[in-house]
Image (tube, rainbow, N blue to C red; front, side, top):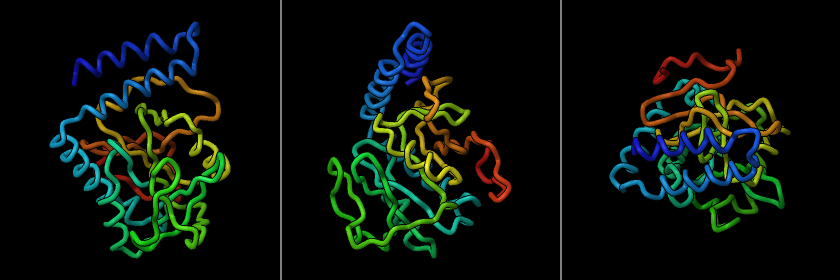
Length: 221
């Protein structure tokens, strides 16, 4: 794993030079991150997924959030199904994204009966689910790579960047395996940063503190 992480660092350093194409740089990092994620041993993935979930569930930020905008994991992504099951057993409003054209919108769900396969086979809220419409909701972000400063590399569709450009006040928490934290990433002006990144080892405090947010003492390093 250490050798793979070193190779990614070297690749990042080379691809984001001024002489390289930004889109090509992002594509190369996405391919490398997907390959590393897909190659995780099942027992390692299960351990890291559980540690991330327990860390998230123990956060004051999460416990004091009225609404959580989450996503349903797909393929080798960090598992969010158990995390959502935890949220269902609380008094929180839970919402998931639905893709419409080039946009995503979040809709409230009560339990697993409110989702069905949607865009690219990823489960989405059914048509009868009401719009969430909470501009202060905690957003749990997917992604392929991050920096400790909160820079994020997604899958290339720009869905979350466009959504967050329209609703910029959401506190944003990303989930990441250790190898997904890089020293730097190629970024564009409209790329959105995460405020915090949760890893198996604990919380990375990446973004600017908002006065309305809770003190993040649990799991923070």
